[in-house]
Amino acid sequence: MFETDWRKVIEHPSDRKLFEALEDSRWEWRTVPALSKASGLSEDDVRRVLQSHPGLVRRSILTSVAGDELYTLQERHFQRQSLAEKIRNSLSSSSTSTSS
Image (cartoon, rainbow, N blue to C red; front, side, top):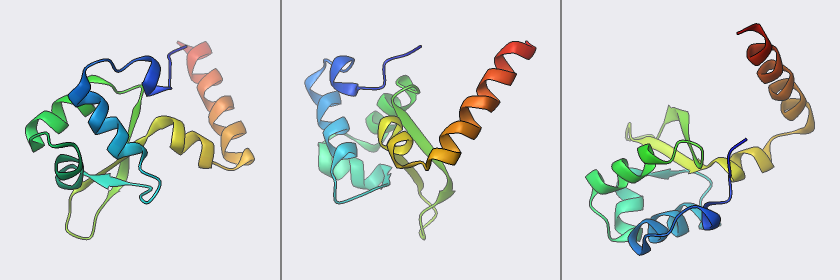
């Protein structure tokens, strides 16, 4: 199993700023431009960091009204799921891993 608490994984100060922006309780989902502005990283650097930590970050299947990709912390997404969703996801993960 992988670690979902970014504080235990992310060490670089600029990367930490990005994850602090993702954790901002005012927003459930964040766009790359918004994360760039909040963290001080370029949009390319934001994308690089997000892509390098797939276990910590979840990308929405939907986009913003402007068409931008939306991101949230994996841990936050899991905490907001209903009990039924957690059970369904757990069962589907188990059946997928046993069928391989």
